[in-house]
Length: 132
Image (cartoon, rainbow, N blue to C red; front, side, top):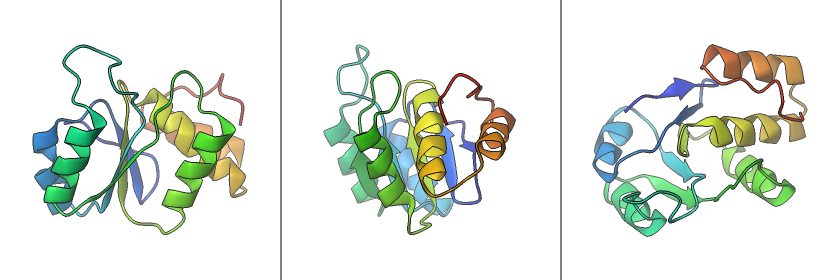
């Protein structure tokens, strides 16, 4: 499991496994956000499986599937979840959609585009083509 911190309370990751949930809870995270649509890849755990594993570990879980660039409704849903500063891990196939959704949600709250792109770049994600 590889986590890429974007802010003090938000990290992104490639696909997580259900058995990673206890370690994430032990590390101090309180929420998991999945940005993967079910059935995107063969063998990928379904959102319901991930949700059950997260809840069994004491974590909140939200599924906000994103195909391509996050849309306004998805960005607003991420922003609403992240408003309470609960330490959160967001994931998708590679982490790119999650990093984009995070940056776009931070822009809604007035974050500076250059600073958001820099934070994502430090985590290994190039958001230069993402409209912030």
